[in-house]
Image (cartoon, rainbow, N blue to C red; front, side, top):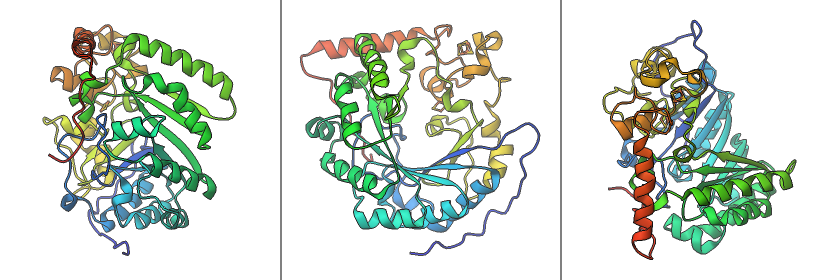
Amino acid sequence: MNAQDSTKPQEQTEPQGPLRPPWAMLAELTHSCPLHCPYCSNPVELTRRSQELSTGDWARVMREAGGIGVVSAHLSGGEPLLRNDLTEIVAATAGAGIHSQLITSGFGLGETRLKELIDAGLNSVQLSVQDATAASNDLIAGARSFTAKEEAAALVRDAGIALGLNVVLHRRNLASLDAIIDLGVAWGVSRIELANTQFQGWAMLNRNALLPTREQLAEAEATVERRRTELAGQVELIWVLPDYFTGVPKPCMGGWGAISLTVAPDGTVLPCQAAGVMTDLDFPSARDHSLGWIWEHSPAFQAYRGTEWMTGPCVECPRRELDFGGCRCQAYVLTGDAARTDPACHLSPDHALIDQAIGTARTAANATDKEVEFVPRRPR
Ligand code: SF4
Ligand code: FES
């Protein structure tokens, strides 16, 4: 299939004033996925294939993204390999002068497909893995996929482009952290992102089954420190903080509408991948508006940009330019008001909600000798 050139929309805007252009874009090409991970941050209402942007739409989105200064695009999903036009989208990304990274389960990445993608300009691959053994990986993913991941890792490594590993951590795999890191080393990755679950989308539905204990996290942090020393100069270990347990909110997305944007499969443009839950904001579509207009002028992107919107303890807090009041989506999901201080912050008047969630998960885990069952991610 050839990338058709889509001609609309036509708004042209130059970056103005102190607003800096976005440097990264998450392109969620599809919500379809052969896996059923319970920690998925995709919305619970998944976009149907018939509602997805066309090849031509994505080509235009990439051109617009390059035009407003995006330098890095993460091609994600769902499983982006399920888009038959992925090669055309990668070519459009490269044509726009944007570095492309494929974020994939590896399921469906054969030698021929990988070569086509690299020939089209693909720069790097980030492979997800659920745990260090096939049995546990496949149980968490809800599908036999470990062998496909192992094969995909070998293909990417042999092809000579950058390969990273992404592991979402939670109660059911934190104990395997050492073995997960060993797996990444054996697969020849240069970077392992150890991402403690962020409770958005499906992960929020599965919070009682996923929340770890403080003891598990303390042990995991010590493991990361030890392995960082051992692997210095060989493999970079990224530890994404478990904000439920630190009392310190994360500087989510580097601030709302500050450095990156997300384009959902149906063309909705969001400041982050979870923001679609905020039903009181009217998020614009790339079908109707240019990315330049959306970034600079859309009310949704301006709603929580900067610090003017802040309430509560954030207003006078010395950390407000460092963490931007935490995560807007987390504040919205837990309190119903995105302008409140992120409850993960120990200064938030809603911080008790976090302690309650940790307590509830612990009670649920202790209530039976079996693990709390996952709600598998799938179309509803
Ligand atoms: Fe960050 Fe607001 Fe908490 Fe201060 S009060 S640490 S700005 S979330
Ligand atoms: Fe949306 Fe944090 S996930 S602002």
